Image 1 (cartoon, helix red, strand yellow):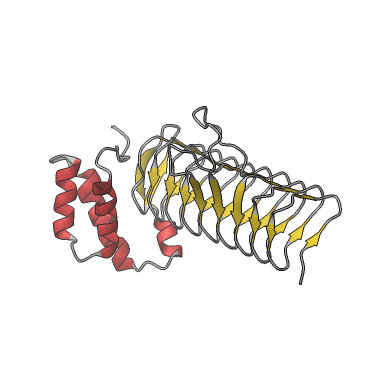
Image 2: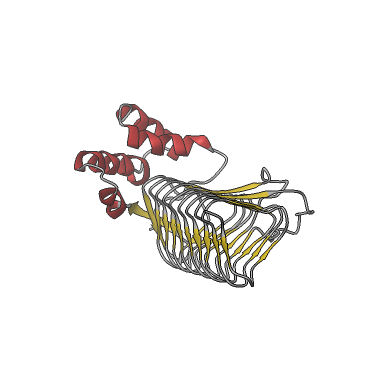
Length: 265
């Protein structure tokens, strides 16, 4: 079946449209855009530049996808925005492509929900099953793991990593890396514990959660040694626990960056 395109939509020559694509009133699709099978643009959506949207993704009115990054260093280099399958992108969402300083790609996973006015800046890498609530914003070069939830009006500093299954509370300012399974909150966010609700929803067993809690206390609540030393002890104690080792490996992966810790007493 051919694409269903409203007569007021502007589709530039060269755009690639998959089967059963629906493009509503007053949408604009650039010559270098690619829309996969079953993609739907509700109305007034702009898909600019070298943007690829994979099958089944639905985009709501006034979303802007693929326009030039909000980075003064951007010099017009060819860069991409790559959006995965079965995402829901709500009204006024903005997503920018990459830059020469970040690999020339912004990548969005699959099965994500981007609520109204959320923003994904240049060179971000977003995993699968991520939820960004209303007005949640990511600065450039942010990495977000699978199954993360970012609360409304939260803001994430450039180059921050957010580990899989983490929860960012609403109105939180995130300046440091967030461990997998972490729960952070606060105007200047701090690590407040583990994302127990998310772990239970994702089917983690009580035994897995208890092991994560023990490791969390050993790394972040113990008073002896440095973070690196406490992490090493946890690695020895929980060497056979895959979930705990995800935290250990996350901390060790980028020792040049600060990992978010608990609120100073």
